[in-house]
Length: 111
Image 1 (cartoon, rainbow, N blue to C red):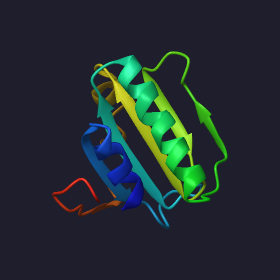
Image 2 (cartoon, one colour):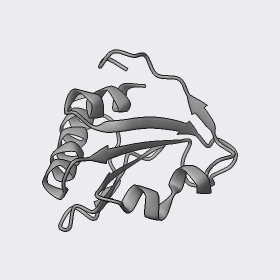
Image 3 (cartoon, rainbow, N blue to C red):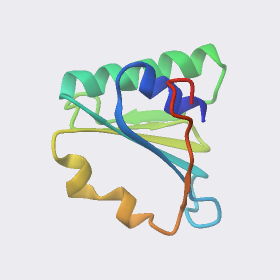
Image 4 (cartoon, helix red, strand yellow):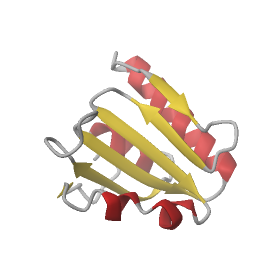
């Protein structure tokens, strides 16, 4: 998946993709990544926006960039969640959307 590769390119950690088609009424895919700090999270989200614009992907909005603890980037059919600190474990989106199919990603950074 293209977005996962963008996150990996900028050292996003534990990047996973969940296919929630038919389970989630607002999106088809969730991309989750961890960042080493709020500043890193902001950089990851900015990179996703830059690359989405380059690829002419639809961008609907972003939330949480000011704090950098949990940033949501809405690319319509793909929701990108970037977490810093313990927030990923705290909100446990993997558990919340456990019915979604985990999409296998290549081992390299071009996922």
